[in-house]
Amino acid sequence: MAAPTVHDLPEGRDPAYYGSSSLDWNPYHPSTVRPLASVAEDIGRSLNYRVTVSSLDEEAPYRDGMQPPSRPEVLLVDRWALKDPARRARLAAFEADQPWASVVVPWNPHDQQSGAVEDALSRQLVTTMPSVMQSLPAAERAAARGVPSFEAFAQLLPQVVEAAAQQFLRHAKIYPPTGALLTERPRLAGPMGELTAAPPGASRPRGTGPSARVTPRTAVAFGAAEAADSFRGRNPAVARARARVTLVDDDPRTGNPVRLTVELVAESAHPWARPNVGPLLDVVAVPLSHADVSPASAPYNPGDTSSAEFRLTAVEPGRHRIRFTFVHHDTDVVLQQVETYVDVAGPWFETDEDIPAPWPARVGQERP
Image (cartoon, rainbow, N blue to C red; front, side, top):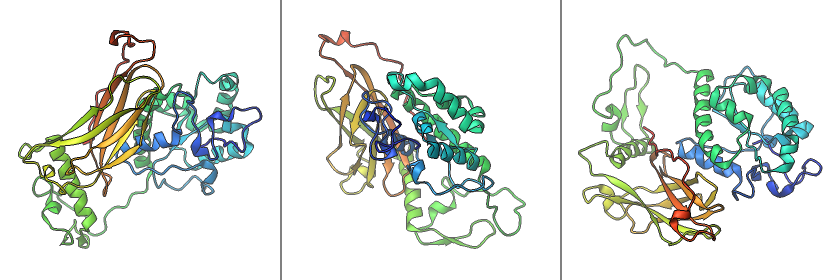
């Protein structure tokens, strides 16, 4: 994250968009109340990535640009950061060190101060980071030119994250296996391969190299993968567990928090239908419209009778979409994603027919 703080803002800049850290930056204020770093972290995690959010001000000095990347990186840039010569130099160093990184420039067209300097700061960003800004694919190029709304940010960031992951794979250092070359194509035994048949801690050969040991954490990961198949109904021999989202409060109105509960409903033959059997999950909530959902995530045990509870506070009337992601707590494996919507009325709406027509919703996706 490259953004100023309230302690070092450019002269005359409105502090309402900033906090004591760069990670407190909220470019879409007052439409949203959460810092953008927190929103980006939730979106990255919902895509089944381990996410680390940091300020460019706190990053270690960069290298010579010739070393391969150690992780995919996405840089969120506030153009106002270019007013600071030190941050401008860090952005240039970031580009020289990581020309494969992706850049997202959130921009609020309703911020009059930003509108007055948009052209000048846009040119300065291209001058500071020419390689990154001029050689991006279509989705990333759109994100680097300026993302004008929270909804557009929520739609574009998943595409940028996946593109950054692909760039990482193209440039990352590879570690080929040691030992003699294989002359035949390796094959897996059974539907999940040989590794799923061995108990935790058992040893088994891997290729022609030394024997490897499967740790309990690895075994849990395989169990989570099997649980994901069961969750999604990919294994017809196993009962299914389905997600249920319930609107607890009637008559949702702008500015008034409404409660939503999320739970899993398992068929009687499913192992999670029994108490204290299912694994601990994290339910991650990401709003896809001008609304705030709290908490950002909640722990949930499928075997308990209780459900995970969230509160939706809408800033504007209309149809608001929320994405809920079920994540295995111990392994960070994404088991399922579901999307729902809530029609929120404003104080001037007398009937449901007065609610504005919804903008097109994207069908919920599952990661394989």
